[in-house]
Image (cartoon, rainbow, N blue to C red; front, side):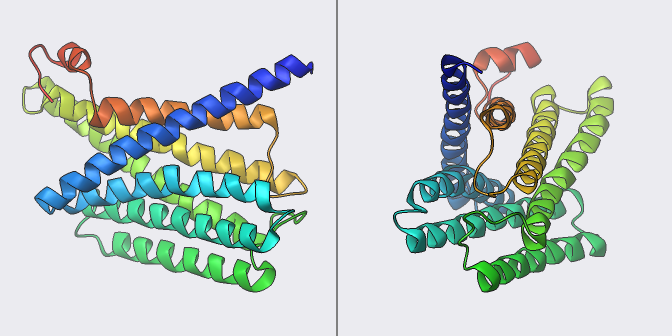
Amino acid sequence: MKEWEVLLLQLLAGLGMAIFIGVSLVVGIRLVRLARRTGEGPELLIGVALLSMGPVSFPVARAALGLQESAPGLAAGMLAFSVVTLGMGGCCVAELTRRVFRPDRAWARLLVWGTLLGLVSCWGITAWKTGFDLRGRPMDWPGYAGFVLRSGALAWTALESLRYWRLMRRRLAIGLADPATTNRFLLWGAGSAAGALNHLVVMWTAGAGSDVLHISDGLALAVSAMGLGTSVCLWLGFLPPQRYLTWLRPGATE
């Protein structure tokens, strides 16, 4: 691959991730502020999840890459913090799904607790085995398990959201549902599915390489593209332009 093509891939990958971080930051802050006013749990859970898994975790992990040789201790600490925030986001997503879609199901509560305990265990084992100094280390089973648990939480909310979207479409057909609200279930489900797939791609890439902190430019572009897709879903779902709402329902307001 030519040098300019590599640079273009890096530019596009960086742009996509920057957009994802920016949209997650704006939507996350807005939802957290809304939750403070209303006292509603779902808004707080979504806001914390977006802030944790986007603008907090990813930049810290990327900064750790640049410090792993000059300051390995600091880099390991930053990576440990990044994994904590990722796990926090995953747990928030799981709890959100339980509250919204399965509030009275014992198995859903067990699934949330299992996600939390599993992520804490993975973090503790990694800290004990490596101290989060992952230079040149292949992916081990706690790393795989953490990726699976986080992607599983996103996949669960995607399935529940898309299932509910189908139910809402039936109600919409007979005038018992709002088009914009119905569309938000589709957008949240699609964005969550893209996030779950994103986690699996990074897991596969890290597992196939010799260093869990690096992925190729091509796969970075793929991850960035999925992040961009999630960004579009978040923006249209939580900050929809009036033109988009009008397209969904003439005269609709946010």
